[in-house]
Length: 394
Image (cartoon, rainbow, N blue to C red; front, side, top):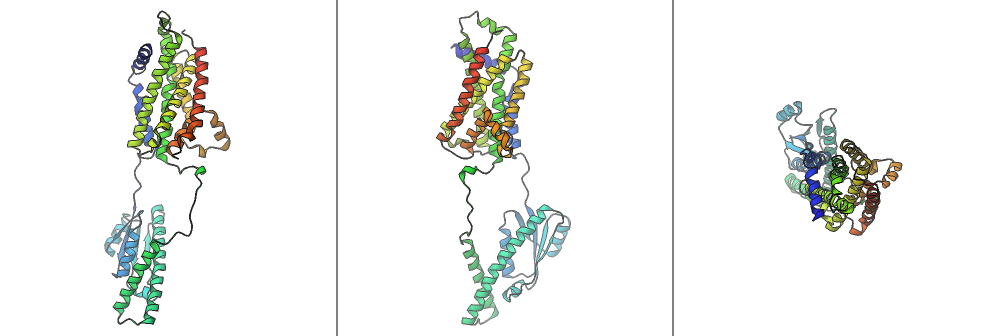
């Protein structure tokens, strides 16, 4: 009951200032959302206008192929309308399929397509590249279908041009179907040891959790300074409460606050950011507890080295931000120089990020995170020993 009473008392003291909720809940959620890129505007697709002057089945086939590109909005338009929209910069490119496109293709001499694009525009350049890729692919299919027509005509001449065109389109559709199921000639393989592709949402969710929970739990030092300056720690001496009981109650309460904060941020990551936090619930719980203990232990040690609340608050913010930056919470460690990546292994934030990354980004098993859990518990033990030895009521 003493432990519960001490923990509850510390919770009331910590949140007596409503501003504390800003650092405990509002800013962590806001920073997670913004740094993930989810708060930005979604990239808009580039609009391409297609003027079909040929009006043939082959020109419609080309239009359908262009519309399959997920990065473009391809719309059929009249020449006058396309010219007006293009001049108003409402479309990045204008493609004209000229008269005689199908007839020329059957003869092996297709009429050249006309493409206009907005100058000095990255989206227009990307649209030109996508259109060129589609046209090149279609040219190969047309050539295959044309050669098929030639061979079929040798075996049995077609009765009419309409019959020849129908056979040509039939072979073109068949070629398209064959290309769609053709096996890849080159297969890209990436070793698992090279790591998973960077996921900005997961990086933000994990990094901001480590940053803000560490900041909250280092704030335990402020709590110790607050009670020391108001002589409430000395009053504990007048009660049958041992120093170990008081410290254990304070540590338990702060750990519970940190675990609740982590649970909130993880829930936000799962349901809002769609980050796969739930791959290993047991492993996740082990990481949460070990990281929470290491952070509280650092707060206890910091509390023995500070005299005033202002000093404790300033140091806890500075230390949390520095450890977060060097531990890879704000930017992936892959972007750091090799020397810094090696030095980061001496920080608890590095092992917190390592363990959470392995669970969330890689989906590794419980066994894989045990080194991270063990090192975080070692940090906790060392800092607790230092903090308890240096702890004073005055």
